[in-house]
Image (tube, rainbow, N blue to C red):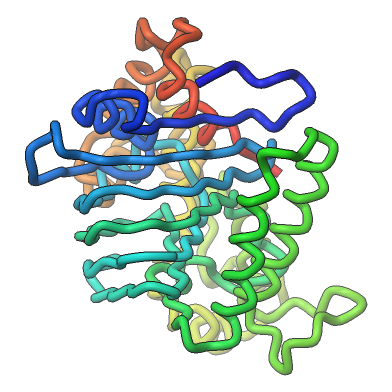
Length: 347
């Protein structure tokens, strides 16, 4: 794990060629603690891992080869991880079975799967090799209706989308070790443009020269994000502001659980991000509740506990524990540094 030159892409590696299986598993657990809880069912001395990952400033990309593992992202982890990202994975070898927000997902070699980290997932993988790209959700704002609809979506290996995107992902991780940071910034922009375009519903697949007109959903979703702090925000207020009939409004959000549920989810997601940041450790909970559009601290507390299974105070404490971990200041603890990288990704 040599420290990279300033001009190179920051990188991180774990390999059982260099350390014992139990040590590698512990390092892997720590490095991905914001994404998954890992379970290994065998003798840890037999565990094998080869991990290489690169931080491109706005996205992260990695190559993983591991003995069979179980991956779990429960509601409490969603609430405390500080991540609002999409995870795109190409399974080069092996695969998994599991659930994404309680819906079944099966992935085999050659498939690409997308996970929205604002939701729960649970999978059991065989021995596997995959390529993973982590992208902040905000990159999809101009391309997609609601990124949550992509959670657990599988692009099958025999389809054109998986073949094209998979070829690019392989080429990307092959080249990353040789790139300068200037090259990496270009690669990051290119990767985001390709993935967001391919995942969006582009109709005939031709990217228009100018951004398409906003759909009713996207028009309303932008207004919701702009007015999250307004406790009076509801369907009636949105319809009046946007000159839209309530019937159109309800119809646009019906596939996403309804307008009220969508507003609540966006407010709770914003609150979870705020609570995970050490910059907000001294802010009063009532102030955070108001900033996220809740009429009272008690209403916020009930909604947060109902959604995530832990209290808002517990979520903040876990975030504080992460950033104040004594090993966080240890430059040799690259696993925690890698975990911190994920929280610092932004467009």
